[in-house]
Length: 265
Image (cartoon, rainbow, N blue to C red; front, side, top):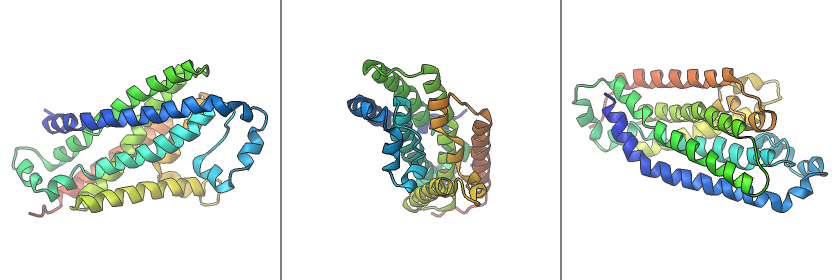
């Protein structure tokens, strides 16, 4: 059982370690530079934020720079996790099916006694490797780095944030999966997935607080809020459930689409 998922997961392991190293280096950099100018935030946080254009404040949901938690939420988790990792998982998801189709491997795979729906599900399941590895390694690095610079943060909040990021990243990967079954050229599928994911981020960010805010409900970014967890210790299991439901819907839609698709030779 799960032969495809295990094989693809092993193939992703090295890349996952490199990804974790890159995100850990970003985390260490953010934590390391914070104490050098944190004192300037203590009394002028409001003025400092006013120096940013309103569009930037809204786009990156910047709430405070006066604490390491607020600084991390902006520099690491909104920019690094919500945007960069979200785009990366969408990119990976877009290659799950389209890459094998384009290279002619899918015909061989489907000649085995395995359904198309199971193939899609197991290909998607292999994304668990980078998602889990990066969410295990990075919080340890963040916690240790914060302690070393004398700015300890709540381990419970950190664990909760990374746990909540798992369904968010799977949802982004599922966006890529849909692109992967819709387009049989991996380059096009990846660009499509990146465009849709970034477009959803912009949609959610720019429509918040407007009369069209409800439209942003389709964006997974609405249900992953690093500021709420790090600054308020607020955990919303309903949001996690919505992300899981989104992922399930996208995976099932991908399975149905692939079942009805012709595989180009």
